[in-house]
Length: 245
Image 1 (cartoon, rainbow, N blue to C red):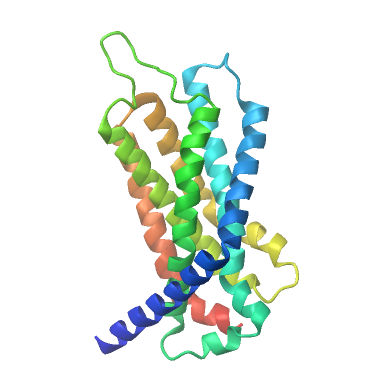
Image 2 (cartoon, one colour):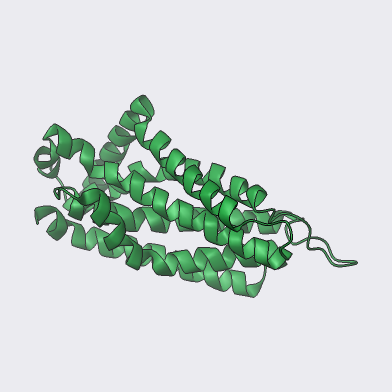
């Protein structure tokens, strides 16, 4: 129990430190938000069209939103360990008493809030940009997003998706932090692992936009939650070897 308490305390200390730095400088938040907005705008200009069917608009919106957020997660995770590496303090951070896995969890908790804030802006902007909220209601049937449950499910999808992206990119950020080409290597290493999360978030979002809540949406969200949990557990266990390497 004392070891668990010490690990939780170390994770909380690292997360609080990173969030203070992020709140003071805002460079990570601004760069992540700018990158996500730029990707979404480019995809929106290239793919959006008023003549498309509602199902097509929903699918394009979901794909563009989660592509932008996946790339933004890589940008945000690059700074997770780079701050200490650039200041020459990475070895001191690794020498902090406690299990190294707690350091990964602390970094993850520090990366997650800015990404959630970016997602809170990116998701509605993408839906409006692609016209995905234009009614698909049938006679006698409300539009898919007319009730509170679909919106709650969309918020849950966003939270689970961002958590999975942050978990994967933060772990690979620890592997590439000492490499000269880490900006290019991090997306190349992380994206193949994030493919299941991208597919699940795109499918769940598109289904919510076109049909509202359904059992299929619940299946995708269950899969996404299992992916997040498995990624966090595996990354926590593997992080000591990655950090020492």
